[in-house]
Image (cartoon, rainbow, N blue to C red; front, side, top):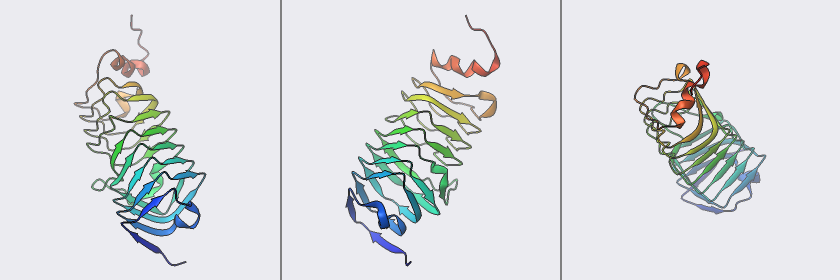
Length: 193
């Protein structure tokens, strides 16, 4: 099948059937898309915008994403690490505003200086991610775990319900606030009174 190319198009509640196979989307906008239990194959999303989209159980196979902007979206059970082309220089997300992430896995991804402060998380995992300088201020993290991540100078002030093992993450200069910062001591078997 020949690859389809789309430039600057707007897709409103598109049928994902054949659209999300062997395609390149450059500067396209997706509005109100509902993708459930779907495998996205051999697709590239470059500087695309997603508004009020809901994805559940979406799997990326041989896909790339760069500088995607998400606004008012909900993502459930997504393994973002399946995106190819990840590097320390190119981030898959350009912006995420008022988005909700539940049961998502972020593996080996770059979010340096990224602003998550208007988002919500629940039972997510960040593993081997570059999150230096990321902004999680005031974010309800709902048991989200961080392991083997670079969290240097990340801001977790007023964030709640995170699971971070300081001995398994780079954390120099990261900012936290009381009382939630006490959760960083959970893995040390201490009794705090």
